[in-house]
Image 1 (cartoon, rainbow, N blue to C red):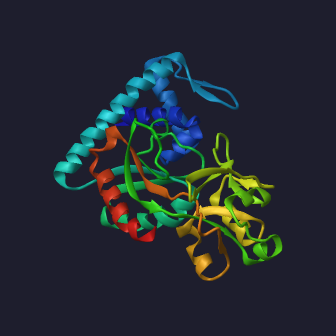
Image 2 (spheres, helix red, strand yellow):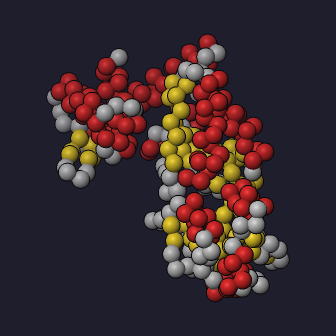
Length: 297
């Protein structure tokens, strides 16, 4: 099916914005992916992509062709999913996304066992603390902390994920412990920040209900594990999921700050495009993950 495979390459290149990324996602070298695109353009006798040294974008014809090619690929995938469902043998590629901390601690450990039980399935995990558009990026399942307000996606809650403010005993000894959430303004708060990130405030549970408190810090990062490392090094107060720092708290490396007024509990769950809900391997992995993760949060 070389033509179909060329369509797959073209779609992933458009979705990911580069031949290298599109090829890597399909486990092809950049040279092979580039040749697939050239073969497709030669077959159609048109240019599908505009290439410069820094950018790659579809031409007007390429954009129109992508819309049709994506529908062809989606229809083929759905047909294969139907066959897999009827045969009882799930197969094919399942693309997952998660934030760095969630992916490393919770999702990555699940994958080897699932693949051992379902050898016809290939799982590809993409980790980033930046916002990912599941539909545009071709992701089948996205594991997230916090329920996004996106009606184009199906949300399934897995469990509540309590959050906690933490710092080292040494930080508290040197800088004092905040007596109320208002005192956080006088501390170095370690923030998860990236373009369009909302975390210039923390939402705290108070006697009056959930409130936003403006916080600031001398430095921030777009990787939650970096924030934990900074907190462990005594550089400030971090707002992290409790499961992430539970061992540090139990062994005294970190202490809980403002335990009577913790951050608002987040929901942990999975997002799925509606069109993928009938895929048996997707349903199998979601059920598998829900069962495995409820006890860890």
